[in-house]
Image 1 (spheres, one colour):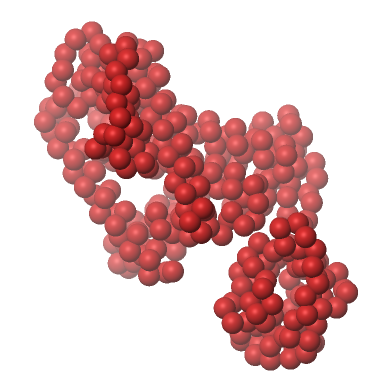
Image 2: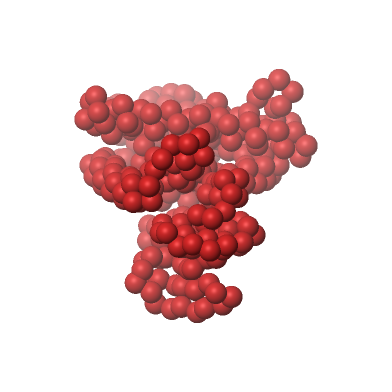
Length: 358
């Protein structure tokens, strides 16, 4: 579990640093001075200055940041963010979102070529000619094991494959349920695969249908393979599907928060994501990569929202100013601070909800 959490922190940090690196590179490309590029958040542990930019490694290791000249102050000069043209500032502000979208696209493309598990809203991309060249169905995969159940006592773990029961090959969840019901209370031979090794276990099934005769949730997993050329379009469609699903989940979250005073089950905070990731790592590298792509995409979508303190909020304010709306630097800074405070409150609310679900 600890290793899973560390891996999740590393993945999340890499995605955030890549996001900030997008801002950094495009800012430098457009002649904006970067005061600091930081990995983690202050206080600083190490710093070095090169080419007018301070590069720092900081105490809190999650994420990173970029501090541009003129971004949050009235600093003037030809290398100031505030002095640049609207289209230049737009590129800089939206660069991080673009990087996260590209990361998600590349990962989904590679998965579609080398095997994509059915984790998309509709399972797989199947639109007209854009469909898998083949779909491979895995054996029954253990999704969860009830504590104290027959499976738990036999040492079955999440992520193990259930292959046979009394020598009969298992292909569907319904088949497993039928056979365990027929043999309720009896000793059976269960063939499973753990970390690549096939084993046959002697398991005494339970008698309680509510508890589950075996006590597992299991189902086969489909993995789709696409032609490399078809995958170029399929990955784009997958991105669109997941963007819409993310926006719908965020909408449910906001509506539920204000109408029902509760957090939608479709939204997870740091604790919930860590819990999900701990399970996903047991299902193999395909699921870890798909989860990474989904997190990168979520970062892009959330940062694109026109809310103060987010990239989308900065872009919205810039656009309003471009259209002639007068917004002073002081009012803009206040809006971003209020937006940041509201985001922290939302994170706390979601985190509390995550903890109550554990």
